[in-house]
Length: 465
Image 1 (cartoon, rainbow, N blue to C red):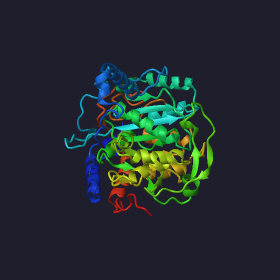
Image 2: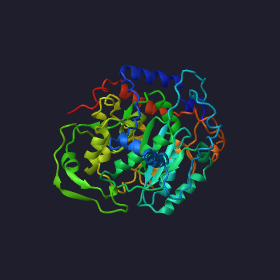
Image 3: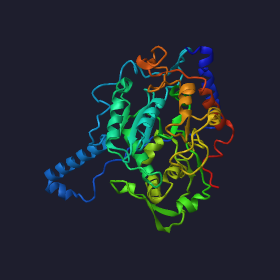
Image 4: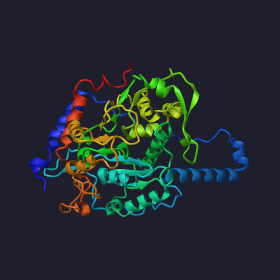
């Protein structure tokens, strides 16, 4: 059993250090809440039409509203995948007895401790990724979070059915009711605009599934966590909820000729089956109505910003979405460009996505395996996630064993697990608001304190070079 002196961190030190860092960095003010768009009648319906045909008008309007509610309310398709959540049965009361400030084991409860956040994970894979998706779900699982799983259309329907059955067979997933699947798969190519279409689709579903999550994280089977969720939730509970972790730069460089000027046609947007992607003969000039920014495909985005991109009344996200519709690097350029051209959000960006990567290298279908030196560098980096893994990468087993303390086929133990140590540690559940941070949380704290208090927090925000 982990001793208090060696396996826990001083909760109050985290609170003071991060708060001091945020004070020195002058964190951006909270943006005004988004107002939902008002439903207005179309100008084609005149008052005389309503007077002459009130019954037809009322029934047509009812049919349109019913269709809209049906399409927008259900995250599942007509595919015969079993539903993983039930609106008639609340989550297990042992997991969520109250919604109070979180507590850290081995320390006295402080009523001023902030409420732990909730993360929304979109976990996606393709053909042959059934096992890696389940493994990634286990490695990132916490009852407070929301999870949406997706196997794209390159995978078989039988794999999607097997994924649903694997999730349903897990008692903790049924009790917390926070794991969901997309039944009607999207086509997602590595290049083109289908990745950003899928990402926005997944985020919109997660927005409808829960009103409580604070940050959105999209993971692929090439990604893996470098610390457990208790560590991540504990550290992020002291951060402003509108902070966005986005690598960004206005220096386009070689991407101008290779990714931004060429016009690419992504068949994933209009074909119901996989097809070959191709380039148009023409090239286009860069826009002057807004500034382009480039970054990485992995970001940690706030709920307010995702609502701004999906349901906001500002036209900027839709304008940029049309521009990037025929661009080869839409996913890595769209979010940095939107957030840096928005006055509401360009002061909420932190120029670090909390991801460890070897560098800006071209996407490879099968990256080389990591070695022990890579493991040591990852641990010392302090990032929350790493990328570039293969499904059979032996370093994943080492991360499970030495960092996550996770057994094969089981979720990562946390403060909500009350069972004995071993393979069934999480067979008995406690309050999901109780966190058990490990010493690994100090590395993420050190990274964030350095980013927020080194005097370059604002000087690195959306600067046009």
